[in-house]
Length: 335
Image (cartoon, rainbow, N blue to C red; front, side, top):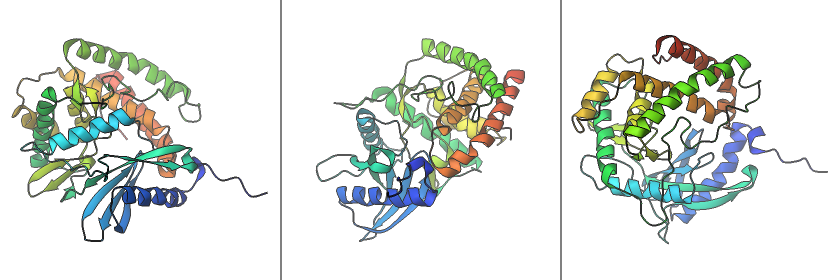
């Protein structure tokens, strides 16, 4: 008998990418792009390729391997990006459409037993901001975030497009923490999660009673931002949904917690555009801790071998961070 094919999660990273390359090639064909080169630049929650076509044009191709996006969410994501691309002062990738006008394509992928969706956008010039943004870059992050929020106050998806609600601890993800095996979430860590979650849930309940939801990016970190000629660009709207503006700021601050000037510069940039958003610091601290919990929740279901192997370490770090939060009321990027 021939050997039973490996499931996607049991494949090596090399084998996973080999299989996904055929999806990427098929997606390019649907978008009318003939790749001259195609290089994988990220293989995690989703898989992204840098594609250069036969005339030298460059694109970012995203295959939604683990994305929670349904068709309505994909349409809303692409509509918002197209609308933002025409706004002065805002720099986002311009989506590419197929010859039939579709902003995404669907391709069956047997190893994952599902149909994958793919989107294509024009490549943004510049370089990833990365782990050590300058004061100027952090200030511009605040400006860019406020411009997104100012735009989305008045903008709404049309037709069949609709964003999911993300104005809660786990956003629009299923709860993978509660029933995770002890080999992944030990009893002591599970008890800490059960202790911390009600504090963060209470903060969300308070915010939702005081504020209205609107489209937010929901994943504004420095690896989703490009810097070119003193201008900041924002990309990867895969997590965008109906949420609270303060969530975007807290998500950014989660990753910048160890940078002394980050809080001051981010808020200064934001308030140069929207001066009237004021939230108690304790609320922001709780939202940052919540960011760590939702990252752990989503990490548990990733099939990339490197991500799977990182789970025990991230569980350990999350435990330290939750312990610190419960002692002090503050979030810290403890390792």
